[in-house]
Amino acid sequence: MLPTQLVARNFRGYGHEQALDLRPLTLLFGRNNAGKSALLRAIPLLAASARSGGSQALDLACPASGRATFDELRWRFPGEDLPREMSLGLRWPDARGLDLAFAWHERKWIHVAGIRAGGAEAPWHEVLPPRGLEPSRILTFRRRGAPQAESFRVRFEGLRPVELEGPIPPDFEALGARLIAYGSAVQWLGASRRPSDRFASYDELLGKSRLDHDGANVIPWLVEHPEALRSISGWYERNISARLEIEERPPVGYEAAFAHVGRPELRVNLLDTGEGNIQVLPVLAAVTAAQEGFGPRIVALEEPESHLHPRLQMALAERIREAIEGDSDVRIVLETHSEHLLLAVQKLVLTGFPREQLRLYWVEQLADGRTVATAVEVQADGSLDHHWPPGVFDDTLTLAAELIELQRQGGSS
Image 1 (tube, rainbow, N blue to C red):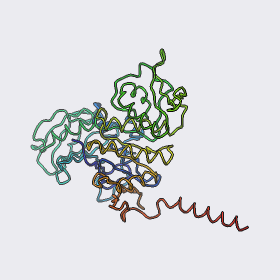
Image 2: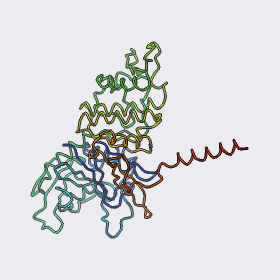
Image 3: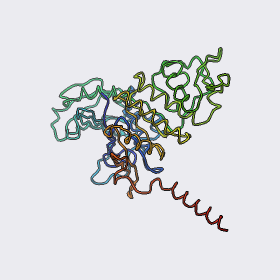
Image 4: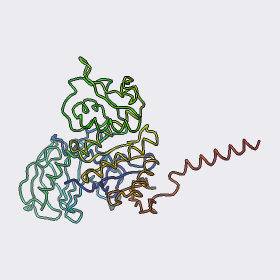
């Protein structure tokens, strides 16, 4: 069961509780430095922490953390009505949820400081003060205001609750298992993506189901997933008239190259082609793996349209639509500045894509520095409701009008 919502509080610029719907297609729009990537990266950060087995509850070695410290991840200016703890949580289709608050003990050890199991109406259970400075995997919790006798203990491996003792909250054991499953369900790709080299060596064949966040392992991944290669090559053939081929080059390893559809003898190494072709390859691989079921079903993408011509951006949107319509369990979450992707989404609605499977957010920074992601409805006629700010993509029209005026002035002189 995939979660339907991620909830963040005191995370980065999100001082108040912020919910992010995980629909089959979720898009984050906003100006630079608004907080789109920060919210999107909470998805892989929580997943990496749920996979980790270390002493830290948050895996800040995960690239999604951006090498930030705990204090840099936490909203640093809480008001009187805001608790200091940073928390992340998930909601599932059956309305149950799990929230986990975090603290940085003596600026040395990140641990779970609070648990809320069952959803927004459930009570918080707070951790009893840890003893000493050394990390402990076993923590004691009790409900706020409850007597000491009602406390329970949890042994964590990273963020994984692996052993419970005492009167645990209802649903906590089952929700902890869901959290662990979520750790394997997420694929994240950052904004900068490309293979690590012109050839993939044999020792890079590691049987990974997940792509690296920068797509560095995309060639060995394709070697091990030939079914994905066929689908991805078909997209390139339709849109740039070239087949993507992977060929073995002993003793080096494997080469990814494009062969012209009309003249297959014209082969070019992947890294010698257009940057857009390179950047979009891991995106196509992640989407295909999610659709076909041999990769994570939640795909979080930063700027998937990077370096793509507008026509190819529209083609990518159609590819995402195919993946979603082929399997309702796929979740694609992307942050973008692309006007063409927005137009493609509006077109999807006008051509029958169910609006309940779509969520669009406008992300902005408020005057007090906090960030808010506001849901925007795409209406039946493809238009956006009043939550979409006016004039967002007017620059192109303004520039065109200025150009026409300059041409008119030049012509009249």
